[in-house]
Image (cartoon, rainbow, N blue to C red; front, top):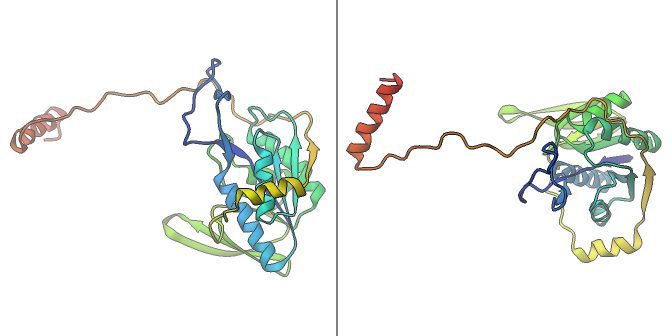
Length: 253
């Protein structure tokens, strides 16, 4: 089984995000990028499938600062092949990223492509369905479990309200992973450093990235505070009288 996993790096939302002087982009001077959480689950799901049924797992990512650590960590978890797409990915949208992934995926001819179902910086759709459109391959998203047999995959798809559907998907296909069947495994830093010495990151070049289809950003801004709340003070009876007065002013009573 030839499994390809596509990953991207996203801003770490734990850190404070600032806007650059242009007003239409994030300031990247101190911006910390981490692997997209759902892509990390896609890696875990791919490794689980390999451990159960054999095959090869290839992890592909765009060349963004910090991507080497992400790829070597994937190797430490069990990925067999690492590919980095070279190009100017600053400010790239998902339409362009999907077209860059398309070239590599067509070369690899996978049986199954896994990617995170979404990311915190998706502004023009998720990568998975956009890539499926480029490659004319079937896509199913919000997947929380995958098994493979006889040229097809049986997937567990989550719906709102806690509903779970099981469906058969003919291969090759692209799946958007919401949650792997187990949490992404932890690997020690020492093992990642070992992979840096023994694993090789292959490089592909994405020239003339086509940004068509992405959004045009007119302005970015921090959340603006609206009218602040009024705190009611006094005894419970006094607060109750004040509340009744407010409700009457609003026409509720």
